[in-house]
Length: 363
Image (tube, rainbow, N blue to C red; front, side, top):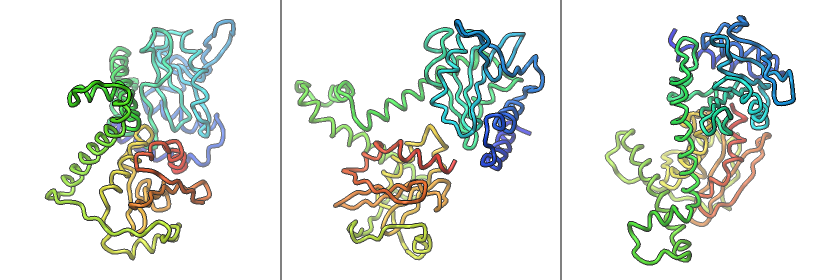
């Protein structure tokens, strides 16, 4: 069986059992050990896969990391495990302490679902603050499969992974920085663009004047490029997108889960360019969490519904976009709706944490 098929099979297995796992030990036994077994390691061979590996930290003796993968008698990968329900953000400091006391070149922090891979790109023998690779085992992206396969026992090569790690980390960082600039362009970023099109003095007043202009220009460009790709993918001839007349927000009844049948009865719904742009903004907020192709939309006469895997019952948010008012609707854990007024669709990026929290309920 090919590695990608093994990965898909393993992902389905985890999906089927994740809700019944309650403890850290159950997480290790049911998910984490089988994960490394899938990578080709003999998890029952203490010469290869050592549980409770001792990693003395400073004056603290006998500190233990959950597992260590051994090669030629030395640890090459440290693995710190948490319960499937644990948020990993609170636990990377513990692994950070272990890393510098061993010869291991890589460290993995996992709760069975999320696997964060660390190394020492920034400073030798000191674990980086940020992982160079993060994988959600329930939603592995296609471009992550070969990177994960490099950690398989049969092909594991420290130098090869380390050289790739640098590229992976900085590609991720560049995307993050660019996303921030799309939302709030920095002064130097604005000056860079002004150099090619503005001959006057670039005073602070000029910078402030062009900040919203550059923001709009960049976001419009991305929207246009995405729309062109959609038209190409759909085999369109490049015609314009039709716009339907929309009702004022106050006249629109609040949508509910029972609105599925109503949506089915609405004919000839055409998505506006603004709705498409908003969809792509939200979609790209989740690039670090899931395969963005799993984020879809369903348009209605009153609002556009942003969904996970096309499931109407797994809606992430709803948007009502009119000329007079733009409203973001977000469900809480009880499906109660919370509404936020936007000045424009670019403010959606300010709600990344809120929307991510909703999406994580469906993972």
